[in-house]
Amino acid sequence: MEQNNSEFKSVLCTLLDKNDQSKYVFFTQKRSAGDISIGFTNGEDVWKTYLSEENLSRLFKTFSLKSTEDYTFKLKCACKAGRAFVKLQEDSAVLHLGAEPTDLSLSLPKLTDSEGKTEVKDLLFKMADSLQQLESQGSTYSFSPVKSPQKRSAEFEPRKQHKGPVVAVRKRLPGDSLINPGTKRKKPATGVAFDDE
Image (cartoon, rainbow, N blue to C red; front, side):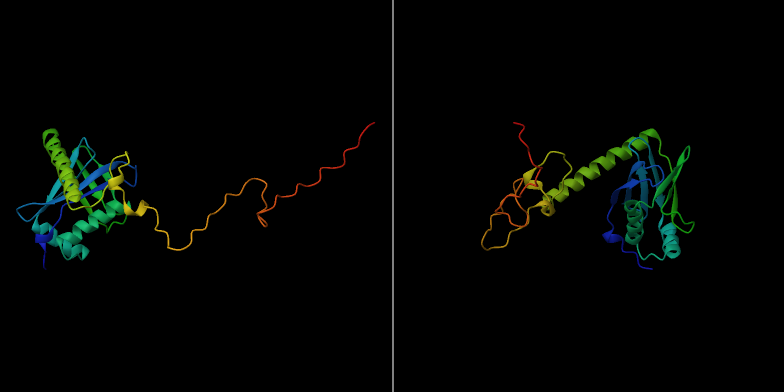
């Protein structure tokens, strides 16, 4: 079984619990020992576990995965698709990546407050670094509610008009006929007014 660990990228994404709509930041990271850390946080508490190469190879066989990237891609897709949910316990949490018993589930111990603060701080700086890296590569992103004209996404740009004669479209005024726009609509007769003289 070939594991392409040289191309492993950390994963950061939002996990929206499908049961109670709680939001978590889900993360994975490759460690120097060859294993990966997997965790999530709600901003206050952090749950994290480490998967050794032995545990990873067992998961690869169980779920027919070819590499660590396939595994983290499966985790990320489950989080983004809304199939993931969390069962919190007193000092741990179980992350389920589907409702079926055959779907992947992970037990993650809760970190102590000091470890959790350090992990949240590290995550914050990783996010800032990845945004800075995107910016230096020329990618556009938008995380600010203030509109910035130099950072707009191309999908919101006005469409290019084809070259040719420009036809001015006149706005229809109230009372104009739809069928014959140059004439006014005729109002229906309201009855005959008799003079009482």
